[in-house]
Length: 138
Image (cartoon, rainbow, N blue to C red; front, side, top):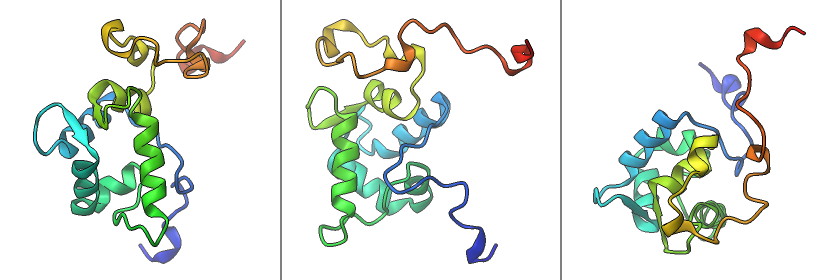
């Protein structure tokens, strides 16, 4: 593996990679260093620094620094995940961002009420589950 093969399948910086639910849950657990069920900005930044492979999976910089602009990328991503502005990310918010599926939008109403606007998940509205690949020949 020389330099040439890096970056082909990777998206552009700031693009959100899609993980499976299992992957996203594993990453969440890795980042939740306090094991309190939520990730703070500090936990997130420390987790990225400690585990560059994990940062690559999330398409986020490993070193978050003011000067390099990586801080802005990180804060935008964190802000996009933190739907309820609690300054922490819970598993539901993390899954909705990294592993969006029709299931992850069923957030308990008590918590996220009113914070999901109509622009949030246009793809999921009224679309039945995608058909398995095999059934595509018409």
